[in-house]
Amino acid sequence: MGFKPVAAVAAMTIAAACSSSAYAHAKLEASSPGAGSVVEVSPNEVRLQFNDQVEPAFSKINLLDQSGKIIAPSKVELDKSNPKVMIAVVPKLGSGAYRVQWSTLTRDGHKVKGEFPFQVK
Image (cartoon, rainbow, N blue to C red):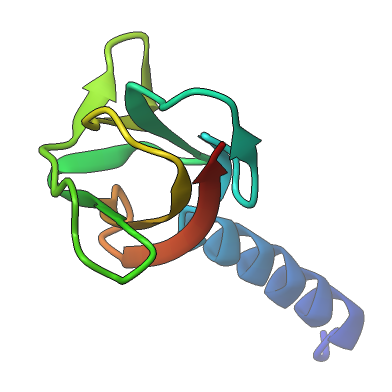
C-alpha cells in the first residue's frame, strides 16, 4: 500500500480547520453606544459584546473625551445572563465626542483590544 496524497491532504485540511477555530481570537460583535453613533442622551453604561467569553479580571474599558483625557476608567463586569458581554458604568456625559478604548483576555488566552468613537448630542 502506497502513500495516498488525497487522503493526506484531506486529513491536513480537517486538522487545520479544527485547530484554527480552537485558536480564533475573540472579536467585538456589537457595542452600546454603537461605534460611530450619535446618541441623544448620555449613556449610563458601555456594553461590549464579543463572539467568545471574556475574562473580567483581565479586561478594561476606558472612556476618553475629545482631548484624549480618560474620563472613566471603570471596573468591568460581565452581563449576568451572557458572559460574552462586558459592561462598564460611565458618568453622565455632556455634549461632545468620546472614544471607548477596551482590552480583554479571552478564554483562549489571547489579549485583544480596540477602540471606537461615539458622540453625545
